[in-house]
Image (tube, rainbow, N blue to C red; front, side, top):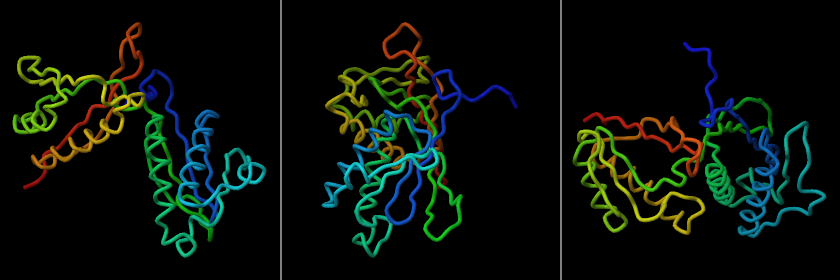
Length: 238
């Protein structure tokens, strides 16, 4: 095994961070930078407020807790009896996961590290370049023709051009614009396309095995250092 460090896709040591739920109304973030913490603050305020529950005044809503950044929410979101069966808290978590994913943070593990009455699971995140960002299309490598044909038909109205590459082992689809860019007005469309692609794979007997960010855009080019994920798929058992 190589002793070289695994990198986050941009030539630096891997970054890990964690989030935990504490007591009945606390959420803590550790190892996120100040900009990411501010984004989380905005997300908490917006998401929780939309559910009819306000975040506490600034003097009470956040603090440094032994190095972790802690937010205190009004009510008791982690208690189902005080939180409409826990549904609003689940909506809140969907928003948190979505924003962190767009920032490049993907879930690495969720584990019950600390045993205690008011302790919940700790979610560990690993940083990677934001997936599919500024990618204008898709490449299918060694994919069955039925998968390619189904995808081509499903996305036909969005395709600018498509063709076989590399001695007919790679099929490339170029879309109009950049549907997978988080800066684009079509960011929702990009997510919907990604989910639709997963459905196409399942319908044709394949499932996602692992998503890896293993390439970078060369320095000097637009979006240098922002590689895109490769989806490796496996054939489902009959």
